[in-house]
Amino acid sequence: MIGNRKIGVIILAAGDSSRLGHPKQLVEFKGKTLLQHIIDVANSFKFDSKVLVLGAKADEIKAKTFRNNFEVVINETWGEGMSTSIRKGLFTSLKLENKLEHVLILLADQPFVTRENIEQLIKLQLEKDVQATFSEYAGDVGVPAIFSREVFPQLKALEGDEGAKKLIYDKKFEFATQKFEKGNFDVDTVKDVELLKQME
Image (cartoon, rainbow, N blue to C red; front, side):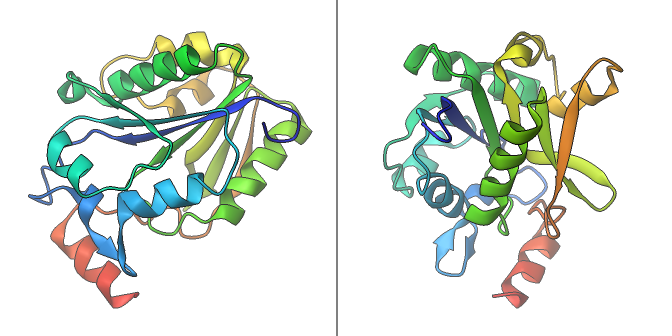
C-alpha cells in the first residue's frame, strides 16, 4: 500500500525486439539488464501486486532475470500488439489483488526511469485524483503511467497495438502529466544500444 491506496505495477516486456535482433530486455546498462533495472526500481516500492508480462523468448529472459516478488505471466498472443500485454497484466493484477485502486504501467526498455520518476508520478496521481497520470517527454506523453480503477474497463478494451495513450483522445478523459526528461530514450535498434553504451 502506498499513500493508503492499493496500487499495483505491471512491467510490459513481451515484445520480440525485431529491429534489434536480440531481446532488448537483456541489453546491459551500468552492470544490469534493462529489465532487471526496471524490476529493481519497482521493487523499491511496496506495491500490492507486481506483474511481469513476458512473451517472445520468455524462457531466455526468465533464465537471466532475478524476478524477486513479481508474478510472471506469459502472453502467448504478444504478436497481436501491446494491448494484449496490458490486458493480460491487468487481469493478473486483479487476480492477485482485486481491490486495486490504481495500476502503474512500466516498460522494460527505458533505462533512465528512476525511483524518483515513479514517486512523482504516483504523488501527482493521488493529489490530482485524476483518471491517469502520464510521463511527459519530447512534447509527447507516455509511460511510465498510472491509471485509476475507473479506467480499468477502458484498458481491458484496448485492441491490437494500441497503448494506453489512446485514452487521452477522449475529451472526457481527465489526466495529468509529469515531466520526465529522458523518457523518450528507449532501445529499439543497434544504434540505440551503441548510444546507450556511450552514456554509461
